[in-house]
Length: 108
Image 1 (cartoon, one colour):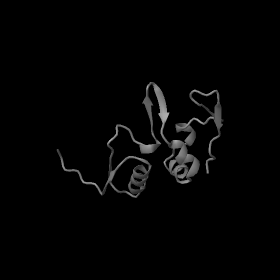
Image 2 (cartoon, one colour):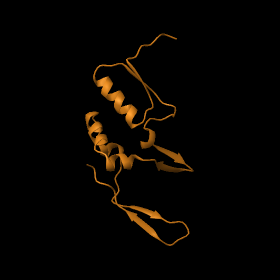
Image 3 (cartoon, rainbow, N blue to C red):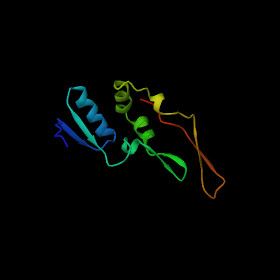
């Protein structure tokens, strides 16, 4: 195996790791990102569980923080290209005949 030299090695391809890699590489640094999962995104990723797609936290980053939308814009990514927004989310409560309706946090 050839020797490879990097200016920085970042452990973890979550939001912080990917943000750091983007900022360093945009300044001309050679960066390696290593991640133990088979996907990038950390707590902002989604996965399949029992044939159902589970979103594990992206809504929190977009709804409550202004940094992610700004970073996506710098990277040339439109939020609408990666997220499908719903007007409301229905949650059925097991063993009860109740429905909880939630709105989404604003994007700012």
